[in-house]
Image 1 (cartoon, rainbow, N blue to C red):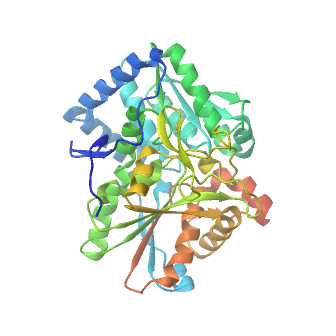
Image 2 (image 1 turned 180 degrees about the vertical axis):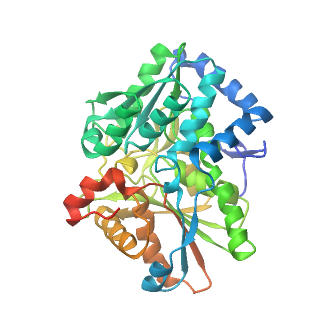
Amino acid sequence: MMQIKKGIPFIDQHNKEYLYGGKFGGNFIPETLKKPIDDLTKLFSKLRKNKNFLKERDYYFKNYIGSPTPFIKLENLTKHVGGAQIYAKVVSEANGGAHKIYNATVHCLIAKKAGKKFIVGDTGAGYAGKMLSMAAKKFNLKCKIFMGAKDIKRQRPNVEAMKKNGAVIVPVKTGSQTLVDAVSECMRYWVSNCDTTHMCVGSTVGPNIFVKICAWSTSQISRELIVQLKEEFGKIPKKIKLINCVGGGSSAMGFWNEFIDTDAEFYGVEAGGPKKSKLHAAPLSNGSKIGILHGAAQYVVQDKEGQIGSTESISAGLDYPGISPLHCFLKDTKRAIYTSVNDEEALNAYRLVSKLENISPSLEPSHAFAEAIKFAPKLKRSDVIVVNSCGDSLKDKDIIKSRLGYYIR
């Protein structure tokens, strides 16, 4: 079990604070953002302890998002692969099709409490943008989404959904035209409009407060899972393996948070990129160095000059050169193990899971399923693996059909 050290605070649901090594995270922000960041930090500190706010959050989680999401055994996949029993937490059954709805809903509730009428956010796979546009519509907020021009082309279904929800989509044509540039442009916009506008960072990245809010929101996943495991097994299985894809890291932190002090084993799966390419989006499993990205210290894909390096992945949601400071800490303390899966392995996992089971994971959790498929045969029948199927494949239908020749919904 890891030693909890003084450093970066991470807030759980019980108003305690896990303290993380001061090596990662921080608030590397321009002076113009100091006051809005401080104001948001103070507001969230009050709201997370406010019984009425928590009651409101739980109401919308249940009646708007649809919590709890299903927990199922993948009988056919377990038989096909052999070894450990494979289960899935089907978070893609949440309203909108992905875990991003938790963070989006909480941010909209915070925006309302702050008296803001506008909300902005970033997106890569389009799920963070889609969910924010949904929640903004629900809570009568005007919404603007920054999205890389490359991602707009490859995630068309989610772009169409954002437009239907009334969001303004701002194409980002700088840099790689992917998630990293969308986050940068979103933060630049907020600097100039923070008096009237609330910013929702789509993952557990950025200045500390955004890491806290996102992880606090998505940890609903692990709160539900603990209850569901006890219903299924009578207790939490010993050394249960919890496997999750990792890009920015929001779904994994939500999946693992309530298990931090148990003997559950965490496996984070990054995007290894195309099989025949040297490009990837896997800073934790490829020996990347610490750098500063979007206001926080973290492991970052960098070039020889120390500049933010190019990344590549079939999965837009994992195509990010950095990683949450929380995951950096979990790696260094060896509390979590991080690996990577290439594009072809993720596609093969999608093909197998969608054919054998009644779920159709997006390309992000397909990376986690690929790791589970490799890992399960090495384990005993009594071992239990749970994969977080955190996104639905609808947004990837064009990519999947072009690569595999068919698409299973």
